[in-house]
Each structure stands twice: as C-alpha cells, then as structure tokens.
Image (cartoon, one colour):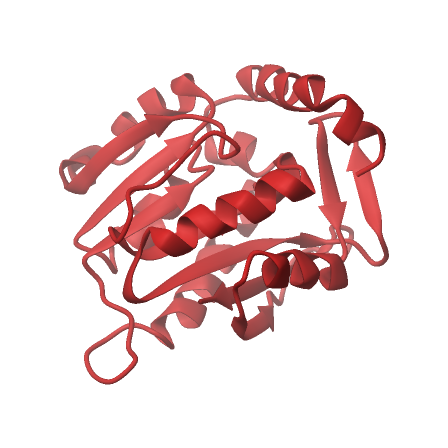
Length: 222
C-alpha cells in the first residue's frame, strides 16, 4: 500500500469527505452510471440464486448485511427480495437517512442501520446468511480488508456466504485521488482473501457494463 500505510488517517477521512458531497441518489452512488443499476442487480441475482435455498450446503435466506450500503440501492433491489431481513452499514449518515425513504414500505424489514467505516465495523457473530460487499473494498487498506473479512467470516451462519463485487484493475494497485480509494487487480484481491483464511468457491465477471469502466468481478467466499 506504500504511502497509504503511512497516511492511513487521511486515506479514510478524505473518503468520508468525498462521500459527504455526493448526491444521495442512485446516480450518485454509481458515480454517474445510474443507468447500469438494473444490469448490475440482475447479474447479482443470478449469481446469488446459485447458492440460496433448502438442502445440503445451501445458504439460508434469513438475514443479509449490505456493506457500503449507501441509500440502499442493493438492499432494495437485490437483498430484500431474497432475504427476510437486511442490515445496512455505511460511513455516511445522510445516505442511511435517505435509505429509510428510498426503501419505502420495505424499510419495515430492515433490522439495523449502522453508521461506520468498515475498518471499524464488527458484524454480530453467527448472525448473517450473506454479507454483501460491493464497490467498497477500495476504501480499505490491505490490512483492514483482511481483518474485516475475518470478522465477516465469524459473523456468518452455517453455510453462510461473503460476496465481494468490485472493480478490478488490469495490473497492480491503481489509486483514485478523487474519492480516496484504490483499485486492485484480481490476483491481489484473491491473495488478500486467502490471507484472511477464506476460499473462493465461485467467481464471475459481470457482463454488459460500459467498456470504459474497469472490469467488475463477483467472488463468493466461505
């Protein structure tokens, strides 16, 4: 992580400052690419349905956690249709406040709204069937990502699943000064997952996204 390791505090505080200025809309959450939301959600549903259901080794549908939830775009379209209850965690309180409005009637099935950066967040042990982590790992240092994944593993129910869906760079680590984040290549992401003591049980590339954005990959971990 180089300089980031030396300047961890500003890495996180700059990101918090950036998100405070972002409009609390789907377009804001997606950096101006609101039009890809439906493609994204449909790809995620197809991915997740492979694991859910009754029977040997299947993942339950009682409770999910949406990490970096923003205004609840993923909670509303992906998680609440599949799970009985969902918790949201995000670093920006304004987004969580907007989520309660954005979710409408569905907000009755939200358990908790946690305002926290993931580097400081400890999900409840043995509580979640699925922990969904999308477009947010770039806001964690390598060390904090590993530790967060380890906490997530403890937070899973039997046959539970951690899902990372994120941009991957073509090679190495690419910093983004605008939102104070980094984009890692797939090999680095896989190595950090392994370092956390998790294994990748399935991996896919999200198709039909605009050519000009980084590839997006989805990884299911246990």
